[in-house]
Length: 241
Image 1 (tube, rainbow, N blue to C red):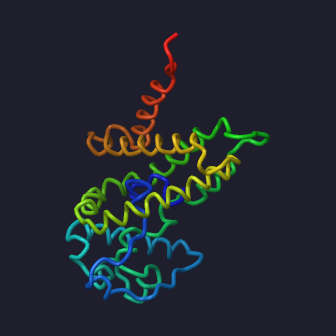
Image 2: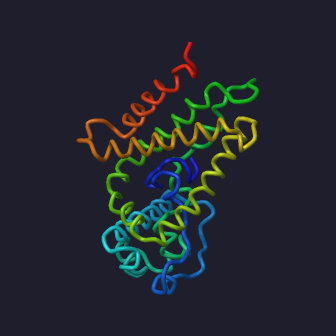
Image 3: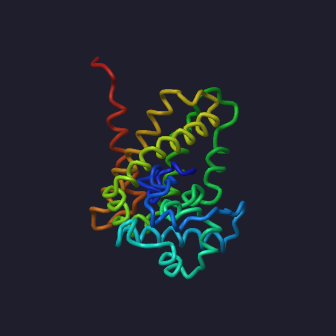
């Protein structure tokens, strides 16, 4: 999924993969123009992911202003020049690249899964979105475990939280446009918004359950449990007979 697929790492799913602006003077002094690679090799993608992982760990431990780009580079084992080949600023590194939250080929599979010969909302849309989210959750389960402190740090630092809340809806709107494109409807279709927000909320609740439990169930299993609970309610009649 694009950045707005619950990745939680990505965030609390969609929002945490948002890129933020410069934060403080010490951070801005570390910034240089970025030359992000257009097509990354597996090695380069691994490096980019490692930068973000270490940036989040340092943020969780020291706060965003508590470490420099040089310290981040030392933790990753790269040079400053290599760092700026991937990210323009330290804060960009903390929130990661938009593509890093997407399992390879996942979005293409989702877009291609729509049945042929259907007009309007397809009967498999919900199932296809659930499959997309589960693929994301299966990939991100360990990352979610290791970044709890990072999520808490974001909510402690007003600048990070403010920008996250600004960019999150923008990224979600981008994702809504992709779904609407697949379904051949307008992006403001009320049914799409209801479905996506419901799945997003289910993802949040699944993450809460997963982190609070003894880990007897996987994150994907927790998500399906929450979805089934919601289905029980949504299947009730809207009026009394």
